[in-house]
Image (tube, rainbow, N blue to C red; front, side):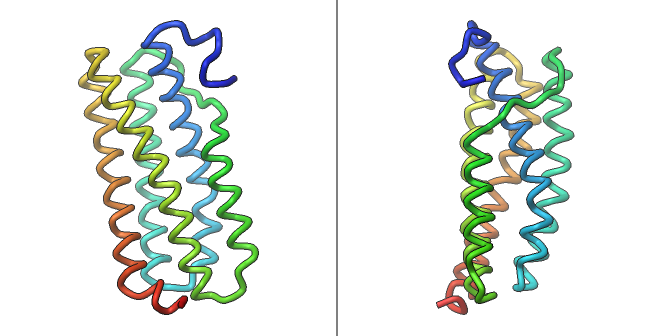
Length: 167
């Protein structure tokens, strides 16, 4: 199912489709983070990814609440964008033998994921508010705040030493 298909006829349909997209994405991220954690050699990076895995599981729970509040079935829809980002991350990580360079690559991959999530949550929040669903928007805003914080932590980690060590 592509983004612009027959099943999307209303603004509400578009909101629900995009909600299903981020739900799928968060679940794929939760499946892929353990592999990233196992490949990380920097202790702070490993710890940060482990913490984000816990956050991701909580975010999935919040998304499930949004589905229920909105009165729609909890389900995902294939998201080629996140699949591509995660596939690229896996390929790059598989090609890097230097552990310090690998850590820098993992941060870059994690930030690509965060940036995708940030765009999706920002859109969903705006749409939820437009639909008069402040209850849904409030839950989505909690996820957005966590994604922005994770991105900021990754940037600080990269700039405070991981990139220097890799270079």
